[in-house]
Amino acid sequence: MTLSTLETLRLTVAALRQRTGESQRELATAVELTQDKVSRRQSGAQPWSLDEVDALAKHWGMSPLDLLAGPTHAAQALTWPPHPADPQPQPVAPQAPPPATFTATQPTAAPPPAEPAPATPADPSPENPPKPTAPQHQRTAHPADPATSDTVLTGDQPTEPTTDYDRDHHGEAVPHPPAPCERCGQPVTHRVNGRPLHLGGWCTPAPGPGAAPQTSATPTTHHQTATEATEATDVAAAPAPAPHPVAAPAPAPAPHPVAAPQPAIAGAQVEYGSTGRDLSYYLDMINSAVEQALQEYEGDTEAASAALEKKAIPHSMTLFAATRVGAVYEHTVYPERLEFLSKKTRNGADEIWEGRHKWENTPLLEAMRRDHTAEATVDVLDTNAAYCSALKTHLPIGALQHQPSGGFDPKRSGIYLLPARPTWEHPHLPDPIGNRHEAGPVLLDDATVRLLIRCHKLGLCEAPHITEAWTSGTSEGLLEKFRRVLTQARENAITDRDQVTEKYVKAMYAKFASTIGESTYNRDIRRPDWMHIIRSQAFANLWYKAHRAHKAGLTIVRLRGTDELHVTGETDWRTVFTEGRLTTQMKLKDQYTLPLNRKRSA
Image (spheres, rainbow, N blue to C red):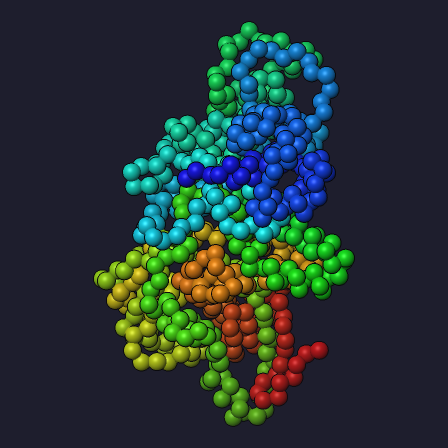
C-alpha cells in the first residue's frame, strides 16, 4: 500500500513530535500557527502548505526534502534542540540513529529501558496468525494506515506504517526464531525486509557511537547469566566520550548499526499484555479532546460534556484505528452482509438471539409471599463499565464463512445455528441465554455459545448442538488495546474526580458497542456480528458474577441487563467481590426488603 505525500507528512510530523516530546501547542508556537490549525492539518481536515513544510523543516533542523522522505529518514536527519550550540568536530563515520534515551522530558537518572513493541497483539500467536478471508469487494481496515479514516481527535499517529513484516504467498507473517531487534535489542520473532525489526518504529533506535552508556537497558537480575551480566557491565563501563570525540580505532560500524544481543525475555514481558506498556500517547488524545472542549466552552463542564458526547462516535473510531496501528493482520470493516444479520425494518432487529437477562428467582419469591413472617434484605450490586469490560471477547477478524457441517472451533468466532433452545433445569440460577422461550431453531453468537460450553463443563447443561456455523478466524485481543486505553482513562478520571472525562469515556465505549452494527451514526464500520458478540459478552460476564456469588453461598434474587445483580444471604457480598468503582469491582446500587415492600435505601 502506498501513502500519499500528505499522509506520509502527517505520520512524519507525529513521529518527530513523539521523538522530541513536543506538544501540539509547542509545535504550533514554533511554526507560528494555532494548536487548532495544527490539529486540523494532522487530522486531514486541512492540508499542510508548502510554506508550513518549510517552517517545520527549519524548526527540526533539516531540509524540506528530508522531512518529506518519511518518518525513518526524518528521524535520522533530526537536529534537536532547534538552536544547538556551536557544533563540535565530529568523527567521520556513517550516520547513526538518534540516541535511545532521547526525549524532551528525560530524567537525570539512568534512562528507562526501551518499551517492547506493540505491533503484535497478544491474541493470535506469531507462529500461527489468523488469516482473514474476504472477497475483493469487501472493505478492510489496514492497521498501519490510520490516516484513511476521518480523524477527529487531536493527536497524530505515532508510527511509520510504510513497512510490513515479511509474509508468505498466503499473506501470513513468516515466523522466525527470536532475534534481537536492530534498533532496541528486544526479541522479535518476525523480519522486515529480512532484518529483525519491530514494525512501525515503535521501539527506540539503539544508541550511536557517541551516545551515553545505558546501564539500565541491560539488567542483570532477569533472564541473564553471570557471564552475560559481566559482558554487559564491561560494555557499560566503556570509556566515556571526550568533549571533542575522535573516531575510535575500532572497526568502522556497519551501515545499519545493530544493537548488542540481549538475553531472551519471557513471553509475558514481550507480549502486549505486559504491564509496562506505555499508553500515554492514546491517553493524550483523550485528554486533549477534553481540554479543547473546556477551552471552547470557557470552563462550562456541562456544555463541554454535552459536546464531547456528541463527538464520542467519531472519536472512538479514531482511537480504535490508532490502537490498531502496527497489527500484523487486517480486520474486515465492511464484510458481505448476511441475511440473518440484517434488520427487517428500520427500527427492527435481526435474527440473532442475545442472552439478555431479565430473570427472577421465582421459587424464592413465591415462598416468601406465602410466608408473611419471612423477610430478607436484598443488595442490588452494580457492575462498573460493563460494555468496556466486554470489549475483551473473541471477535471474528475477517468476513464470516459458512460452515455447513456445524461444530465449534475455539480458534474461530461468529454465529451458530442450534436446532432448538438448550434446556435449563436450575431455577435457582439464571438461564445463560436469557428469558426468551420460542420454539424452533435459534441463532446464537460466539459469546453465548462459549458461555453454554462453560456451563456444560460445570455440569449445568448439555453441550450446545451446532448444526451450522458462520465463522472466521478469531482474536480475543482485537479490541484489547482499545479497552485498556479506555479503562485507564476512566480510572484516571475517577482518581482525579474529573467527571467530564469520565462521562466522555463512558460515551465512547457505550456508543462504540452500539453503533458498530448497522447504525446511520457510524459509517466507518459495519460489523453487526461484533455488536452482538460484545453485548452478549456483557451478559455473559454478569452471569459469571452471579454464578460466583451462588458458589460463595449467596442467593441470587434477580438479574437485570448487563450490570445489575440482586443478592441476599448471610454471607457479606464484600467477601465475594471487591467494593469499588474499577472495572474489576462491584458497587452497592440499592437495597430493598423482600417480600412486597421495597424499602429503598437513602
